[in-house]
Length: 426
View 1 (cartoon, rainbow, N blue to C red):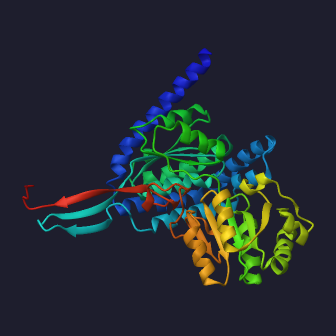
View 2 (cartoon, helix red, strand yellow):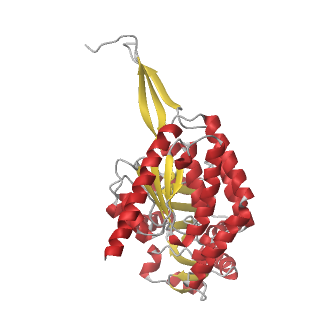
View 3 (cartoon, rainbow, N blue to C red):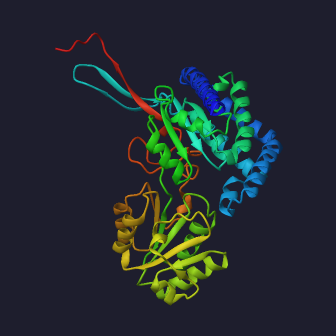
C-alpha cells in the first residue's frame, strides 16, 4: 500500500512538472514566428528519417510484447511500423509545415458606425493533452499539429506503443532544439502508469483541452472523469449505402476499398446497406470481392438468400465497430430506409452513398447527421491528410468547437482585437 501511494505521488509530481514546463513553452510557442515553427518541423522530419532504424527497433519490441500478450491481428496492424510507414510519418510532418500558419489569421474584420475597427483573430488553445493507445504515428501527427498551431503538447502513449512513441518523440525534440524553440513544447509522459491519465484529466488550469485517441473504454473514461474540456470521437461505426441507381463497377470498387484497404482504421466501413432495387444484380458481385479478400460477411435474411456464404447477423452487429475483416450487410428499402438505419445505429462519424442519382445523393448528404458524408467515394477518406490538413489529431464526432478531422486550424480559438481612436461609450 505504501509503495503504491509513493508511486502515485511520483506520477503526480512528474505530471505537475510536465504541466509547468508545457505552460511555459506554450507562452513562447504562441508567439513564435511561422519560420521558426516550420524549421522545427522540417528538422523533426529529417530526424525521423535519420532515426528510422531506431524507431523500427523500438516498434519491434512493442510488437513482440503485444504478440506475447495475445493481441488481435487488427490491433497489431495499427501498432506496426515499417520503412514505408516511417517515411509516411516524416512526410506528414513536412506536409504540416507546408500548411498556412493559422495563428494570427484574421477570420473576419469589420468597422462599426462609431469608427471602431473589429477583427476576429485566431490564437492557440494553449496546452493540449493527447491520450492515445496503439498508433505510434499519433506521436508525430499530434505533436506536429500542436507545434504548427502554437500549442504545447503533452502526449500520453499507451503501454502498447510506448517504446515506438518514445523513439519518435526524441526526433520531435531534436526538431524543436534545432529551431531554437523550447523542447518542452512537445513532451511524452515518461511512464506507462495509468495513474498518469487520471492526473492529466484533473489538470484543469494547466491543460486547456484533452484529445483521447483510442477505444471505447478510454473515451468513456475521459468523458466521465475529465475536468478539462474534451475533443473526442466515439466509435467509427461507418456505413456505405449502395443505392438502386449505383453503377455496379463503382460500387464494387468503393465498397471493397471502404472495408478492406485497412480494416483497423476508424474510417473503415462496418455496415453495408444495399437498396432492394439493385440487390439482385449488385449484392453478389460486391460480396464476391469482399469474401475473396478475406472478409467475413454477416447478413440479414435477404442478404443470406442472395448469398448463402453470409453468416446470420445478430442485432448487435448493426452497432458493432469491428476494426477487423468483418462486415455486416443489410438490404434496405431505398435511401430513406438507409438514412433511418444510420440514424439508429451510426456513431455520426463517416457515412457514404454510392449512386448516379443526384437527388438521392443530395438527400443523403443533407439528412445524414455525421461529421463526414461522402458521395461516390470511400469512407477511408476520413483522414485529415486526405482533407489537405497534413494530418489530424483525431476525428471529432462532437458538435462544439471542432467536428470532423481536427487539423492545425481547429486547434486554435479566437480573440477579438478592437482598434479605436479614443471612442468612449455613451
